[in-house]
Amino acid sequence: MSRRERLAEDDGYREWKGAYRSYDIVKEACIALGVVVALVLVLTILFSSPDEKPSTVKSWASSMPLDFVTTATTELDGSSLTGSYGPPYNDANGSVQHAWFLHPQRWLGISHPIDTAQDFVLAPLRSITGQPALQAAVTTYENASSSQQSAWTSAYEKGLGDKSANATADGAVSVPNGNYGPLPTIMTGLLRFAQSGGLDGALLTSKQFYQTDYTKPLMFMADGGLLAARAQTEHLLGDQWGMMNETGSYPGQVWLWLYTFWYQIKPFQGQNADLLVMLVMGALSLGLILIPFIPGVRDVPRWIPIYKLIWREHYRATGPAT
Image (cartoon, rainbow, N blue to C red; front, top):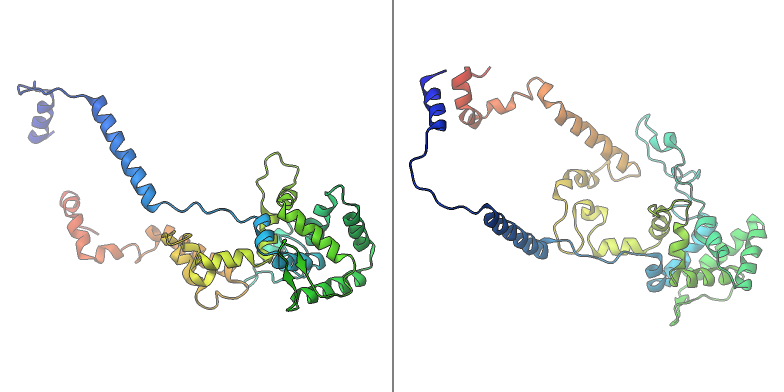
Protein backbone atom coordinates (compact mmCIF):
# COMPACT_ATOMS: atom_id res chain seq x y z
CA MET A 1 0.00 0.00 0.00
CA SER A 2 1.38 3.40 -0.98
CA ARG A 3 1.89 6.28 1.46
CA ARG A 4 -0.98 8.26 -0.15
CA GLU A 5 -3.38 5.34 0.27
CA ARG A 6 -2.37 4.91 3.95
CA LEU A 7 -2.99 8.60 4.62
CA ALA A 8 -6.38 8.45 2.94
CA GLU A 9 -7.32 5.42 5.04
CA ASP A 10 -6.17 7.14 8.26
CA ASP A 11 -8.30 10.20 7.46
CA GLY A 12 -11.38 7.99 7.39
CA TYR A 13 -10.88 7.08 11.07
CA ARG A 14 -9.81 10.49 12.34
CA GLU A 15 -12.17 12.14 14.82
CA TRP A 16 -13.99 15.25 13.52
CA LYS A 17 -13.01 18.39 15.48
CA GLY A 18 -15.09 20.92 13.55
CA ALA A 19 -18.60 22.32 14.09
CA TYR A 20 -21.82 20.32 13.69
CA ARG A 21 -25.07 21.41 12.03
CA SER A 22 -28.49 19.83 12.53
CA TYR A 23 -29.78 17.90 9.53
CA ASP A 24 -33.35 16.70 8.95
CA ILE A 25 -33.25 13.98 6.30
CA VAL A 26 -37.04 13.51 6.38
CA LYS A 27 -37.60 17.19 5.65
CA GLU A 28 -35.10 17.12 2.80
CA ALA A 29 -36.74 13.98 1.35
CA CYS A 30 -40.17 15.65 1.45
CA ILE A 31 -38.84 18.76 -0.28
CA ALA A 32 -37.11 16.68 -2.95
CA LEU A 33 -40.27 14.63 -3.50
CA GLY A 34 -42.38 17.78 -3.79
CA VAL A 35 -40.01 19.30 -6.36
CA VAL A 36 -39.98 16.11 -8.43
CA VAL A 37 -43.77 15.76 -8.33
CA ALA A 38 -44.25 19.41 -9.35
CA LEU A 39 -41.75 18.98 -12.19
CA VAL A 40 -43.51 15.80 -13.38
CA LEU A 41 -46.89 17.54 -13.36
CA VAL A 42 -45.60 20.54 -15.31
CA LEU A 43 -43.85 18.38 -17.91
CA THR A 44 -46.92 16.16 -18.19
CA ILE A 45 -49.12 19.15 -18.94
CA LEU A 46 -46.66 20.52 -21.49
CA PHE A 47 -45.48 17.38 -23.27
CA SER A 48 -47.87 14.49 -22.62
CA SER A 49 -49.70 12.84 -25.50
CA PRO A 50 -53.30 13.89 -26.11
CA ASP A 51 -55.98 11.50 -24.91
CA GLU A 52 -57.71 10.89 -28.21
CA LYS A 53 -60.99 8.98 -28.28
CA PRO A 54 -60.59 5.53 -29.84
CA SER A 55 -62.18 4.72 -33.18
CA THR A 56 -64.95 2.14 -32.89
CA VAL A 57 -67.30 0.40 -35.28
CA LYS A 58 -70.10 2.44 -33.72
CA SER A 59 -68.38 5.77 -34.46
CA TRP A 60 -67.59 4.57 -37.98
CA ALA A 61 -71.16 3.51 -38.75
CA SER A 62 -72.53 6.74 -37.26
CA SER A 63 -70.18 9.16 -39.01
CA MET A 64 -69.70 7.33 -42.34
CA PRO A 65 -72.75 5.09 -42.89
CA LEU A 66 -72.31 4.85 -46.67
CA ASP A 67 -68.67 3.79 -46.29
CA PHE A 68 -69.66 1.28 -43.61
CA VAL A 69 -72.34 -0.38 -45.74
CA THR A 70 -70.07 -0.44 -48.81
CA THR A 71 -67.31 -2.10 -46.77
CA ALA A 72 -69.74 -4.58 -45.22
CA THR A 73 -70.92 -5.59 -48.71
CA THR A 74 -67.35 -6.31 -49.80
CA GLU A 75 -66.91 -8.40 -46.64
CA LEU A 76 -70.00 -10.36 -47.60
CA ASP A 77 -68.69 -11.31 -51.04
CA GLY A 78 -65.07 -11.73 -49.87
CA SER A 79 -63.66 -9.00 -52.11
CA SER A 80 -62.37 -6.80 -49.26
CA LEU A 81 -58.67 -6.55 -48.39
CA THR A 82 -59.14 -8.84 -45.40
CA GLY A 83 -61.16 -11.33 -47.43
CA SER A 84 -58.40 -11.61 -50.04
CA TYR A 85 -55.43 -11.21 -47.69
CA GLY A 86 -54.29 -14.78 -47.19
CA PRO A 87 -52.31 -16.01 -44.14
CA PRO A 88 -52.57 -15.43 -41.21
CA TYR A 89 -56.30 -14.74 -41.71
CA ASN A 90 -57.51 -17.06 -44.48
CA ASP A 91 -56.40 -19.25 -47.35
CA ALA A 92 -57.12 -16.70 -50.08
CA ASN A 93 -54.45 -16.16 -52.70
CA GLY A 94 -53.53 -12.72 -51.47
CA SER A 95 -50.29 -10.78 -51.85
CA VAL A 96 -48.26 -12.80 -49.36
CA GLN A 97 -45.01 -11.09 -48.42
CA HIS A 98 -41.83 -12.93 -49.29
CA ALA A 99 -38.16 -12.28 -49.94
CA TRP A 100 -35.95 -14.73 -51.84
CA PHE A 101 -36.63 -18.15 -50.30
CA LEU A 102 -38.30 -16.66 -47.20
CA HIS A 103 -42.09 -17.11 -47.00
CA PRO A 104 -42.87 -16.58 -43.29
CA GLN A 105 -46.58 -15.91 -43.82
CA ARG A 106 -47.12 -19.25 -45.51
CA TRP A 107 -44.82 -21.06 -43.11
CA LEU A 108 -46.72 -19.80 -40.06
CA GLY A 109 -50.09 -20.51 -41.65
CA ILE A 110 -53.51 -19.25 -40.54
CA SER A 111 -53.21 -18.18 -36.89
CA HIS A 112 -56.20 -15.78 -36.77
CA PRO A 113 -58.86 -17.33 -39.02
CA ILE A 114 -61.33 -14.79 -40.38
CA ASP A 115 -64.30 -15.60 -42.61
CA THR A 116 -65.36 -12.06 -43.48
CA ALA A 117 -68.92 -12.95 -44.53
CA GLN A 118 -69.64 -14.98 -41.40
CA ASP A 119 -67.56 -13.08 -38.83
CA PHE A 120 -68.37 -9.51 -39.90
CA VAL A 121 -71.92 -9.79 -41.24
CA LEU A 122 -73.94 -13.00 -40.96
CA ALA A 123 -72.96 -14.29 -37.51
CA PRO A 124 -73.50 -10.89 -35.79
CA LEU A 125 -76.91 -10.58 -37.46
CA ARG A 126 -77.84 -14.07 -36.26
CA SER A 127 -77.28 -12.88 -32.69
CA ILE A 128 -80.05 -10.26 -33.01
CA THR A 129 -83.40 -11.41 -31.62
CA GLY A 130 -86.91 -10.06 -32.10
CA GLN A 131 -86.49 -9.16 -35.78
CA PRO A 132 -88.03 -11.98 -37.87
CA ALA A 133 -87.82 -10.03 -41.14
CA LEU A 134 -84.08 -9.57 -40.67
CA GLN A 135 -83.55 -13.24 -39.82
CA ALA A 136 -85.61 -14.26 -42.86
CA ALA A 137 -83.41 -12.06 -45.08
CA VAL A 138 -80.25 -13.67 -43.68
CA THR A 139 -81.71 -17.14 -44.29
CA THR A 140 -82.65 -16.21 -47.87
CA TYR A 141 -79.12 -15.04 -48.58
CA GLU A 142 -77.47 -18.08 -47.00
CA ASN A 143 -79.72 -20.52 -48.90
CA ALA A 144 -79.11 -18.86 -52.27
CA SER A 145 -76.54 -20.24 -54.71
CA SER A 146 -73.08 -18.73 -54.93
CA SER A 147 -73.86 -17.21 -58.31
CA GLN A 148 -77.03 -15.62 -56.97
CA GLN A 149 -75.23 -14.23 -53.95
CA SER A 150 -72.55 -12.79 -56.20
CA ALA A 151 -75.20 -11.19 -58.45
CA TRP A 152 -76.88 -9.53 -55.46
CA THR A 153 -73.66 -8.20 -53.94
CA SER A 154 -72.33 -6.97 -57.29
CA ALA A 155 -75.56 -5.12 -58.01
CA TYR A 156 -75.68 -3.64 -54.51
CA GLU A 157 -72.05 -2.50 -54.68
CA LYS A 158 -72.81 -0.82 -58.00
CA GLY A 159 -75.84 0.88 -56.43
CA LEU A 160 -73.76 2.08 -53.48
CA GLY A 161 -71.23 3.53 -55.91
CA ASP A 162 -73.89 5.45 -57.83
CA LYS A 163 -73.72 9.21 -57.40
CA SER A 164 -77.35 9.22 -56.20
CA ALA A 165 -76.54 6.91 -53.27
CA ASN A 166 -76.36 8.83 -50.01
CA ALA A 167 -76.77 8.72 -46.26
CA THR A 168 -80.17 9.95 -45.09
CA ALA A 169 -80.78 12.28 -42.18
CA ASP A 170 -81.65 9.40 -39.84
CA GLY A 171 -78.34 7.62 -40.52
CA ALA A 172 -79.67 5.12 -43.07
CA VAL A 173 -78.36 4.53 -46.59
CA SER A 174 -80.35 5.16 -49.75
CA VAL A 175 -79.47 3.48 -53.07
CA PRO A 176 -81.15 3.51 -56.51
CA ASN A 177 -83.76 0.83 -57.18
CA GLY A 178 -82.33 -2.49 -58.31
CA ASN A 179 -82.40 -6.26 -57.93
CA TYR A 180 -80.55 -6.51 -54.63
CA GLY A 181 -82.42 -9.46 -53.15
CA PRO A 182 -82.32 -9.45 -49.32
CA LEU A 183 -79.24 -7.20 -49.12
CA PRO A 184 -81.05 -3.91 -48.31
CA THR A 185 -82.70 -5.56 -45.29
CA ILE A 186 -79.44 -7.24 -44.25
CA MET A 187 -77.33 -4.10 -44.55
CA THR A 188 -79.90 -1.88 -42.86
CA GLY A 189 -80.03 -4.31 -39.95
CA LEU A 190 -76.23 -4.47 -39.73
CA LEU A 191 -75.94 -0.68 -39.92
CA ARG A 192 -78.48 -0.18 -37.12
CA PHE A 193 -76.75 -2.85 -35.06
CA ALA A 194 -73.39 -1.12 -35.53
CA GLN A 195 -74.78 2.34 -34.74
CA SER A 196 -76.17 1.01 -31.46
CA GLY A 197 -72.74 -0.30 -30.44
CA GLY A 198 -73.82 -3.93 -30.56
CA LEU A 199 -71.50 -4.90 -33.40
CA ASP A 200 -68.44 -3.82 -31.42
CA GLY A 201 -69.32 -6.38 -28.77
CA ALA A 202 -70.31 -9.04 -31.28
CA LEU A 203 -66.93 -8.85 -33.01
CA LEU A 204 -65.15 -9.35 -29.67
CA THR A 205 -67.11 -12.41 -28.64
CA SER A 206 -64.72 -15.26 -27.83
CA LYS A 207 -64.15 -18.01 -25.30
CA GLN A 208 -61.68 -15.91 -23.35
CA PHE A 209 -62.71 -14.34 -20.05
CA TYR A 210 -60.90 -11.09 -20.86
CA GLN A 211 -61.52 -9.60 -24.30
CA THR A 212 -58.06 -8.54 -25.38
CA ASP A 213 -58.04 -9.62 -29.04
CA TYR A 214 -59.26 -6.70 -31.18
CA THR A 215 -58.15 -8.24 -34.47
CA LYS A 216 -61.62 -8.58 -36.01
CA PRO A 217 -62.96 -5.05 -35.37
CA LEU A 218 -59.64 -3.54 -36.42
CA MET A 219 -59.51 -5.53 -39.64
CA PHE A 220 -63.13 -4.64 -40.40
CA MET A 221 -62.49 -0.93 -39.88
CA ALA A 222 -59.22 -1.08 -41.80
CA ASP A 223 -61.12 -2.30 -44.87
CA GLY A 224 -63.14 0.92 -44.80
CA GLY A 225 -62.08 4.55 -44.98
CA LEU A 226 -62.29 5.58 -41.32
CA LEU A 227 -58.84 4.61 -40.08
CA ALA A 228 -57.07 5.86 -43.20
CA ALA A 229 -58.85 9.21 -43.00
CA ARG A 230 -58.01 9.59 -39.33
CA ALA A 231 -54.39 8.56 -39.87
CA GLN A 232 -54.00 11.11 -42.65
CA THR A 233 -55.42 13.85 -40.42
CA GLU A 234 -52.99 12.93 -37.65
CA HIS A 235 -50.04 12.60 -40.10
CA LEU A 236 -49.61 8.90 -39.33
CA LEU A 237 -49.62 7.40 -42.83
CA GLY A 238 -46.57 5.56 -44.12
CA ASP A 239 -45.61 8.34 -46.54
CA GLN A 240 -45.94 10.79 -43.64
CA TRP A 241 -43.32 8.91 -41.57
CA GLY A 242 -46.24 7.70 -39.49
CA MET A 243 -44.46 5.31 -37.11
CA MET A 244 -42.30 8.07 -35.66
CA ASN A 245 -45.10 10.62 -35.34
CA GLU A 246 -47.47 11.25 -32.45
CA THR A 247 -51.10 12.23 -32.71
CA GLY A 248 -51.68 15.95 -33.05
CA SER A 249 -48.67 18.25 -33.12
CA TYR A 250 -46.75 16.35 -30.46
CA PRO A 251 -43.34 14.79 -31.11
CA GLY A 252 -43.31 11.04 -31.34
CA GLN A 253 -40.80 8.23 -31.21
CA VAL A 254 -37.98 9.95 -33.09
CA TRP A 255 -35.72 6.94 -32.52
CA LEU A 256 -37.95 5.06 -35.00
CA TRP A 257 -36.73 7.23 -37.88
CA LEU A 258 -34.36 4.46 -38.98
CA TYR A 259 -37.34 2.13 -39.50
CA THR A 260 -39.54 4.67 -41.24
CA PHE A 261 -36.67 5.84 -43.45
CA TRP A 262 -36.64 2.59 -45.43
CA TYR A 263 -40.33 2.88 -46.31
CA GLN A 264 -39.63 6.13 -48.14
CA ILE A 265 -37.28 4.58 -50.73
CA LYS A 266 -37.38 1.72 -53.21
CA PRO A 267 -37.56 -1.29 -53.08
CA PHE A 268 -39.24 -0.89 -49.69
CA GLN A 269 -42.46 0.54 -51.12
CA GLY A 270 -43.89 -2.64 -52.64
CA GLN A 271 -45.97 -5.45 -51.21
CA ASN A 272 -42.92 -6.99 -49.49
CA ALA A 273 -41.93 -3.76 -47.73
CA ASP A 274 -42.53 -4.92 -44.14
CA LEU A 275 -40.51 -8.11 -44.52
CA LEU A 276 -37.64 -6.33 -46.29
CA VAL A 277 -37.48 -3.61 -43.65
CA MET A 278 -37.41 -6.20 -40.86
CA LEU A 279 -34.60 -8.10 -42.60
CA VAL A 280 -32.54 -4.93 -43.04
CA MET A 281 -33.10 -3.82 -39.46
CA GLY A 282 -32.30 -7.31 -38.21
CA ALA A 283 -28.99 -7.28 -40.09
CA LEU A 284 -28.13 -3.78 -38.81
CA SER A 285 -29.04 -4.73 -35.24
CA LEU A 286 -26.92 -7.88 -35.44
CA GLY A 287 -24.02 -5.83 -36.78
CA LEU A 288 -24.36 -3.39 -33.86
CA ILE A 289 -24.30 -6.25 -31.35
CA LEU A 290 -21.21 -7.78 -32.96
CA ILE A 291 -19.18 -4.54 -33.19
CA PRO A 292 -16.82 -5.59 -30.33
CA PHE A 293 -15.93 -8.71 -32.32
CA ILE A 294 -15.45 -7.19 -35.80
CA PRO A 295 -11.76 -6.35 -36.46
CA GLY A 296 -11.26 -2.88 -37.84
CA VAL A 297 -14.74 -1.65 -36.93
CA ARG A 298 -14.13 -2.09 -33.21
CA ASP A 299 -10.95 0.03 -33.50
CA VAL A 300 -12.62 3.05 -35.11
CA PRO A 301 -12.93 4.98 -31.78
CA ARG A 302 -9.17 4.73 -31.29
CA TRP A 303 -8.66 6.76 -34.46
CA ILE A 304 -10.50 9.73 -32.97
CA PRO A 305 -8.14 12.19 -31.16
CA ILE A 306 -10.57 12.85 -28.32
CA TYR A 307 -10.58 9.14 -27.50
CA LYS A 308 -7.02 9.26 -26.14
CA LEU A 309 -7.78 12.49 -24.31
CA ILE A 310 -10.70 10.89 -22.48
CA TRP A 311 -8.75 7.75 -21.62
CA ARG A 312 -5.38 9.38 -20.92
CA GLU A 313 -5.41 8.55 -17.18
CA HIS A 314 -6.22 4.94 -17.96
CA TYR A 315 -3.35 4.55 -20.39
CA ARG A 316 -0.93 6.33 -18.06
CA ALA A 317 -1.66 3.65 -15.49
CA THR A 318 -1.84 0.62 -17.78
CA GLY A 319 0.44 1.54 -20.64
CA PRO A 320 -0.13 2.74 -24.21
CA ALA A 321 -3.16 1.69 -26.23
CA THR A 322 -2.69 -1.30 -28.48
